[in-house]
Length: 123
Image (cartoon, rainbow, N blue to C red):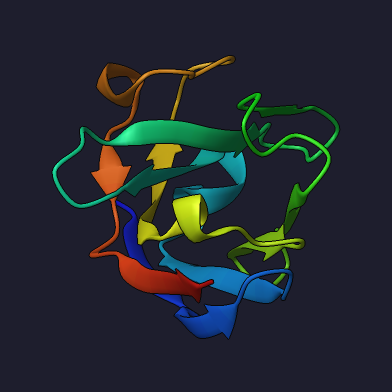
């Protein structure tokens, strides 16, 4: 079992930065690929980024590539999402999730989800 708690969301102006954190409980954290998803008002939840269990492999959605960076610290059971050059269209609730799959790019591949943290980018 893995429990996930996100933090670090807030209100930021366009062009600004935020770093989200996702703290995990449970010994299995290091065996899971970790992903970030987001859901904007009135829209479906979408994939943002994923990092392999070792941290050696990452993958990003095209809309955030070059602006966002995912990382993890297995010693601290934490995964991060550094978000730079934020745009109003990045406004959403951001969720972290854990998957036993090697390349989990869809929601169905994830077993564990956090409760989400709100990110609001003002223009």
